[in-house]
Image (cartoon, one colour):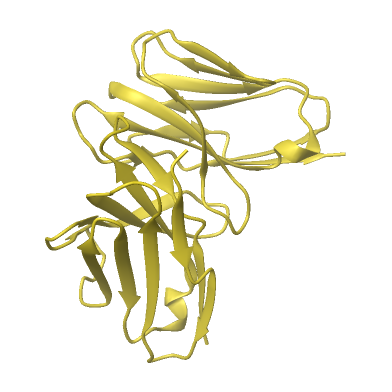
Length: 116
Length: 111
């Protein structure tokens, strides 16, 4: 199946700083990528839909100025958590949709963010 | 409003037992997917079902899509400790291209 990578896999940052997470589709072009947040033993919560070349669509309750999403190319989307707080600590997962494969979504391995 | 009701939320069983996880909805889904996720990793797609009444088997796992495409089940036969993980159902309702997720079932298979 298609491969989606995320970098970094783990990151620890201090309160007030910003951290960027990258999501790449390695063997297909993804016009649409998704960013999810997940708490332990819970389901995925969609944060935003990232469309190449246009503004991201954020889900209700997700602060767009805090979670900046950029989808500058067909294989790369980035999520920047700005002015991080300890409550932003979570597991962030991206997925990419392959338009040539019945819109299957392929998931990255996730990024564990810890804000101290 | 949770469009996909997944149950049970937690399940702890002994190795060798059978189990079934359910996903139910009042909405019709054009397709439904089952994922398995291990701690610290992303979800891995197990199967996609698209046809009402469809049954798919993956070794000891049997997936069924309801005739009306409103519900699905995952049955595991003779569970093994390696089956431990979070099982998630997700699907596309109607023509909506946004994946709708169940709340997940955390399965622990004890030796």
